[in-house]
Image 1 (cartoon, one colour):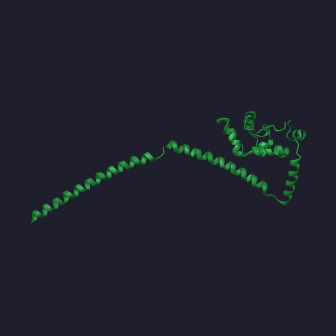
Image 2 (tube, one colour; image 1 turned 90 degrees about the horizontal axis):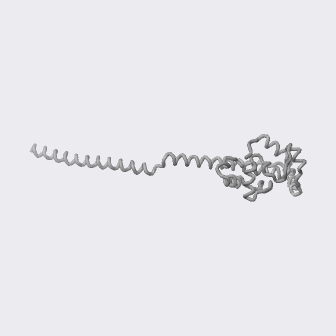
Image 3 (cartoon, helix red, strand yellow; image 1 turned 60 degrees about the vertical axis):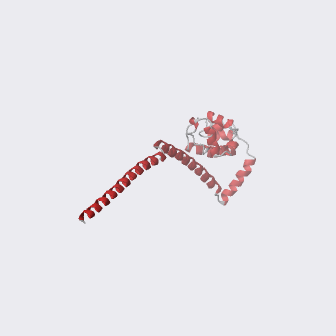
Length: 195
């Protein structure tokens, strides 16, 4: 009886051992295959870096657009006194004509009407880019969105993409409306290079 018991135990251990060996081999193979499949779906460090850079650029652009919107919103939030002033400005806009003497007195230099180079940040080459897009006057630039200004800059190549055109429509509007003192003060605060 003892030998049949020993035989039963040996058979049971033998069958159980093969079960565990097969299970271990299956687990190892599954782990190795899972590792390789998982690794193939993971983007490379370079792809992640490019995506992060793209998102940072997009974020900077959105911040610039947000700042422009905030400035416009601030200009629309007025008191009753400012509303009267705005009405006066609107009636003046309709009858506005370029006064070269007033512009020269405020800015300290001779100004030509609709010279886009008057805007801080715009030089002869960038002015040429705007002219290629049909934007040739202060009024046209004042009515151009910051996104459109960026599109104009992008058309000139990598060299021009570093400029921030967010304030250009505002400056052009000051020039178009004849607010020479305001334009001079703003430009003195934000002086940069022209290209």
